[in-house]
Image (cartoon, rainbow, N blue to C red; front, side, top):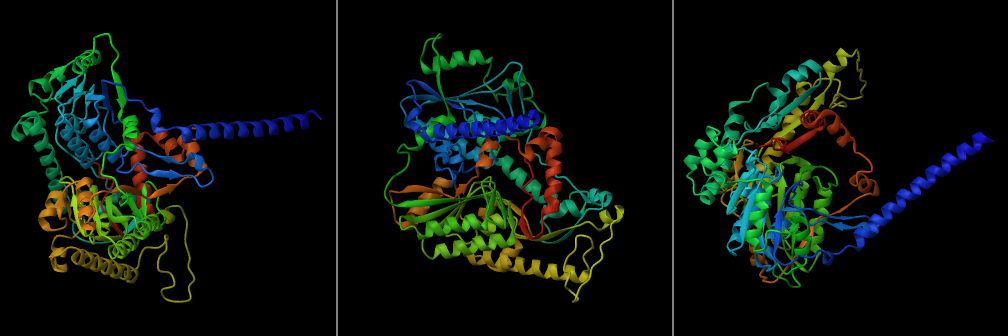
Length: 588
């Protein structure tokens, strides 16, 4: 009897626990749903705190829950939410200035440049911009160099050394483990699969990486040079000899203005705002202010709309989500915008290294259908390469930042092969078939020359189609001319302008302005797509109540080891024909 009581008590406890958790979740949802931007109050004589200590995506995204609509959420911490907030702060009499609080910025180079450009525009209002950091990463300094006064902690540090990148190579790893990638590629610069074939970087790959790294560095130096009144030659010398590695050295070479503790910085902030030394500084975070500014009249308004559709992440065959571009979500978004009579033009914002050739073609087709109904303009972000360029090439006009990485017009196919691994483990696979080519691929057998020939034939067909798509979309370029600048080679936006792959240098606002001109409208609202669906389980995980498998692995292995594991996992999962730039190439 006691045993039964204990069992019933345990079961009842479990149900009570589940009920409490669900009740808490409902309370959280109701709180989130009932919250309003009106709750955010901006006090007089406020300072906008530009602390970008969160991952920055072009599009923060709208998330909906089918079963629990009260949990629907529209985040306002994306790149363009931040930029629009800075633009609104320029005319907001309550905002006296901006404080840049550097904290290892995670934005890409082009994203950082876009925020920096907005800050330059803000300065024209006559309001102050100051910056403080305990440690300046190179990207943090690039952003902060726009400030009127740059501070650093007396025991802080600074990184100013030029750009670099590092690639992992897996040829020996494959031989040691027996897990091999069968690779067929087209394009001598198509470096995404090179790590599977070699132990060292090829000269062609080293050449293209060197060219685009130097292109990015030239742009960064040029802008810092103008803001700090230092020549680019001086900046190169500082980088070469690490002449800014300590606060004192950084001040000596004029990269920073003041060495001070945070309390001293805050004292100067009070003076800049015009308040007494014992008064509290009214600060508002960029995230809160972006929510506050979201409903303000920061753009022209009207009944007409321009749809901004974001393609951010690797392109996969499937539905897609906030982290991956799928033809399902993209096709639905383009169709929705195409069939909405109030949407007069579409801007496709691309921040993607490419991926699945099939998915890229299906998205291209939806863009082609949309162009017949209304204008489509492309705005490129940090990267719009390979498949990311494929879905851009047929737009009415392409805008890119000078620091955008684009091109990479090439094709490859990969298939994981575990023959040697299976042999080492004592596993033998036997096949039975009715026809000669009934087995086109087996994980446990190497590709035959005949099988390799069929795959190469498919890759050649895709390459021909890719280059023809580019030639058709780019007025003035023949297919042969496209092939001459293709071969998988990567270009900066500035170089792509010179070779005809893009039409103009500029950001999203420039693309919107041109789209409005094509649609012959002046007053318009912006409609952002896609809208993503989320499950209740993902929400619980987001609150930290449940740890994801990835979070646990990262915690146990450490950041660097997790990156290696993730790259190996990606290597084994890539199947079929790919249009992909090596998206895991990290610029430091």
